[in-house]
Length: 401
Image (cartoon, rainbow, N blue to C red; front, top):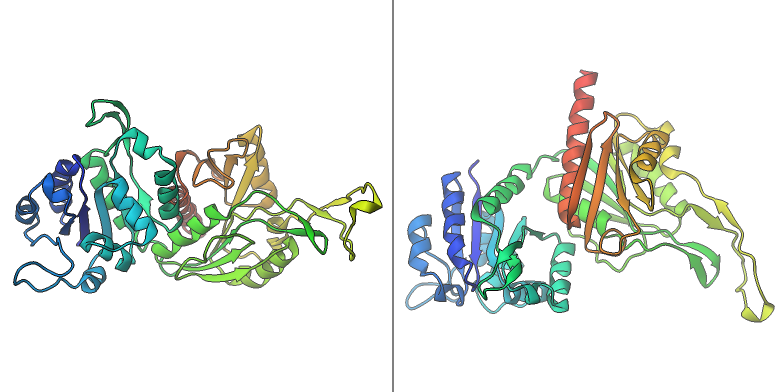
């Protein structure tokens, strides 16, 4: 695999590990262009990276001395992956806020292919609310993370913040590069976000879904070469680039879109949180002065099950948000909805799932496969789901042939 990688090195003591990352990438046949921040040059000399990569190291936007400026746009066209190791709190902050005051941060804004960050910092910094928010922002935009790991830190303290080992970083970079394009040629449909069911002209019944999981699935499918349509419920997330987006509000709206779009797709992931109950709507605003009210709720349509007459060879993924008996309830739902696989998560936990940047899920298939995906960013979970989607799809094709 003749891969082109931009390796960004920012200013932390872990910069010395980046030398081994570079060695590992080159050993696998990658062409690597190293970009260093000013801080990184305090820890490792650019000449070290230049010798190992056999390329001049980029350090300044405007060039240095009599050398011409480097064209970061042309570099973005050349690169298949941006890997930043180490990614310091400062560098992550600049990426999240769109600041561009050196070559690496300027290049980040032009890069349009997969991005992998290997953070390295003290535990207190990693757990600071500002850093948490920055990494959530980056994750929502499709940036992947590896680490940090726990162990001995430069301060002498023990805790989370160590940059992952070079071998693990190289392996993850290679995994990202190897899946790039494996969904090419497929027309994929993803639903995301909550539904809103009106009670009266000013009130509605909804749920806690933020849409982040569906967005991550749409972004991952796009990056892996698919033609993606995202059916988007009411959320505050900006529509992802390079994805066709159609909006819905109620379960009935979503059903109408699915009836139109599902027959022409190759696969559907039903990540939207659809209301199970529909309130009896009042045409007039309800007023407190009128006294107590009883809200009548009727069971809503099982939208995924209702698509059965429109199904041909599509691969279908359901979601199950549960509070107890996770695996058994998910398996029952998979059968009822005639899904090929189902993704289940425990919505009692506040650190994953609804309105969180991370998730932990159990994936079950009709063939009996079972995979527990431990807590990680929703983008990483999305890639795991697409991996399983492809395995199931290939198995179905083999059976038909």
